[in-house]
Image (tube, rainbow, N blue to C red; front, side, top):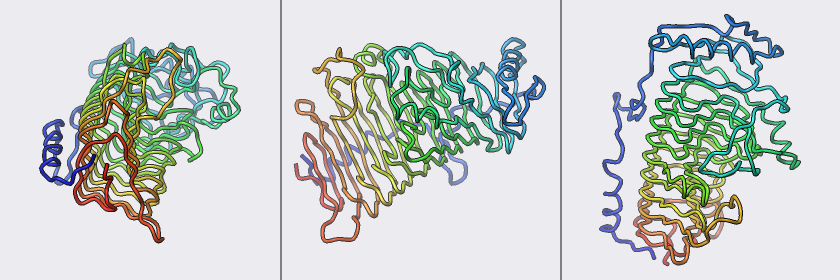
Length: 434
């Protein structure tokens, strides 16, 4: 049940103190200092390796040659690979450590739509299979595994996944393997992604998985609202991730924190922790800020603040399911504004599918210490839907200074709650009474 007790709320808010290291530059608070930008002394251009930016020439060999050179010459301080203005069509390719991929203004790295030769890789161990199909999965368009000190940046050049051919395969149910992400970094650390436009990903856009010390800042991520599963940024079993100052408008969650899928995620046992999402604006038919639903390794110490959402499905969505296991704790969302949203706040223990029939229905997730404060919404159809799990009640759910105004009509937006315990103060419309 919910109690309007300020003392309980103060206890909840105390939990969020001292979890994150932040830096201040003037009036701007940022976490981006966790990974300093690296100045590369060695610089090469994709044109040095035969790259042609005419939108028709296939540049796969040029990119692979350039990155091979960076990998094997190992210049002190690393190497910057410059991509000048133009449209560079290419197959997928792998990055290497100690490199900067720099897209000049007007530069576009465009994925080929020939899917017949797209590389296949093994499923992630915390998922046990491809997220969409059994077996392996297609490698991301730009990929990295076991790397350190990698930067993707530039002058707002574009990485274009040309995802419509993949979306149509999904709609027609002709996929043999899980679609590729646009950028996936695996088992890597010290990564910076900034000042780049990501467009039309086949699947998830930016997916750091089993990573640490990741900064994603000043990016634009766009895909049509009906493009399937085009999540913006999905930190997955990763720690010390900073996401700031970005615009995202896609067909799925803008930011979704994950940590593995059912029995595979439980066995792998790597949580996502110390995730900051700050000054993000966008729209989506799904959630602006999400945790889950793949949370089997656990998710803890997440801070999302100064978020602006419009024309969206859900403002904040904490989602999990039986069989997931894992602990979701110490999640704070504050200073969030939303407009034209179906549901303001959703906390659900019955969301998401299973990889197979081997999940353990007794592996119940535990959700505790969720703080939602200073949230304002207009034209919100339903204020909140908060349903925990019987025998695994969600606890420490604390709401403060939450105002969610409905569309014009005789009835304000409503709350619907079950198996939830916490406290609320200054919540309009009136919060759940059970």
